[in-house]
Amino acid sequence: MKAIRRAMWPCTLRGRLSLVALATATLVMVVLTVVFNAVVRDHLQRQADDELRTRAEAVATTVDTRSDPVRVRETADDALLDTNVWIYAGPRLLERPVSAPADGTLTTVAAGLAARVTSRCTTFEGDGPVRLCSRPVGEVPSQTAPGAVVVTALDLAPYRASAATMLLASLALGTTVLACTYVLTRLAVGRALHPVQVMTGQATRWSAAASDERFGATARPAELAQLGASLDGLLDRIRAVLRHEQLLTGELSHELRTPLTRITTELDWWRARPRSAEETRAMHARLTDAAQCMRTICDTLLDDARDSTRAVPGTASVLPVLRYLTAGAPAHGTATVTVSCPETLTAGVPAALLERIVSPLLDNALRYARSRVLISARQHPDGSVRIKVVDDGPGVPDSFTGGLFQPGRRADPGDGHGGAGLGLPLARRLARSADGDVRHDAQHTPGAAFVISLPAA
Image 1 (cartoon, one colour):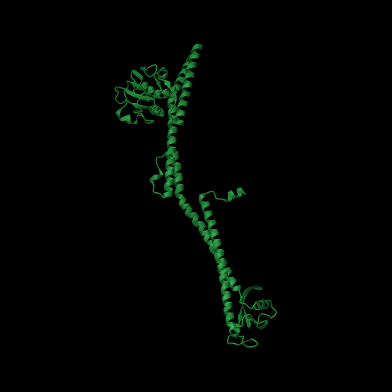
Image 2 (tube, rainbow, N blue to C red):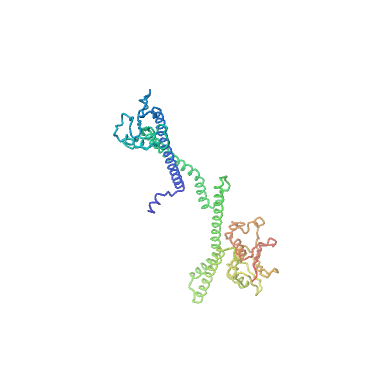
């Protein structure tokens, strides 16, 4: 049964609204048709009764109840008045229609009405429907029977034919109205939903292509304007998610490149010639360290991506992290790295996060330095930890300082140095996730200087 209902129930909103409108219109039309035809039948019956009473009153003027016995006076239109008329004086039948036998069923019904000596009407269903009405004649003293009773009859077939015609006409009209209602409802609903279909297609295309187009730029009715505003917000969130996903992918690729390079170098070196057992164990240790570094990078970036606004718990001694980074940093030319940091300096971030913040800055410094790179760390008077990474390279062009921390941007993509433009934005984002920051010191010359601010332990 449920399957049948699901099969009959339209799947589209247009079909459902059209079906609901058709059902509602059908109910209204049925009620109106029933009420209308009931009123028509009642009106036709009243019309027939009025005609019978009029004829009875006309016939009553020909009955002389003052004479004894009661007699019927003859008039000029007597034949017309005697049509379907019975006149009784008590139980005695004075006149009857020629077409109605004295012992016929219709005469018997008329005699029954006359016996009640009151004004009454009844319908006799014989070979055809006949309406009969009785009317007492004459003024008599109280509690005595009237001198005579006139009973008139009328064939109801024409009236019922008129009622049937009205019923068929109302059914035909109702069917036409329902068909027009269904068609017009489908057209109106389809026209009303067309902008929604257009907006749905646009939203699908824009979300897939991360387009900057939005619905708010087009004037629409209030309801569709609210829908457009909701879709605009949804598209903005989708675009932000896509951008965050692309950024995370790029950052992972950027950060994993160094340990992957170390692993590749170790394997190439091991295949170049046979190694002793001690050299093999050392190589295995370096491979393990690189793999652990990759795992740390993945865990750190993914944890930050899950909730970049949370406060990062944990502490780390700064000097060991800086020494680990400088020891494992790839060689770039002849630049030397110098570390200046107190032994007891502690930052209020985990060691893995501190490593990921400093590592991109160190890689950039080694990439562009001519001869030296200096990493200095100290406790600032306000309690924060400041780590400064300085190189003696060409520095950052003044025209590029505004886009320095924008993902994917480089000052000169064709300068021969590798890089995807993701290191500095990643360092700043991770630092800010820990209530810190990374900024460029534009006052430092020559070379480039970047300052990392982190909360104290």
